[in-house]
Length: 108
Image 1 (cartoon, helix red, strand yellow):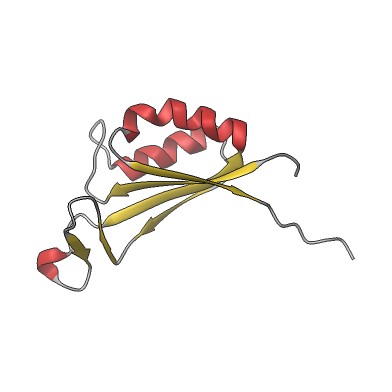
Image 2: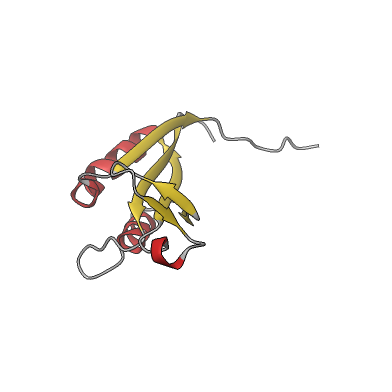
């Protein structure tokens, strides 16, 4: 695998919806349809955002709308194109991009 790769993380909230569907699910389906070989949705157990309010799974009163991260690794050019396409879903949300190296096991 050659080329520059990026790890993209999209931070949303558990209850965010777009077009009558959970946003994280909509993002995952779109990534799959666009040929991304793999993506993961991670649900946080604790977090806070720009409002400073805690979201915590252990206390029922605070356990609503927990942070969720959708992440995938893709070639830099394709990742940027995907983010442009997904922009309509991502307004006001945090997206981080890191350059990464892919590790491959050498043949014996």
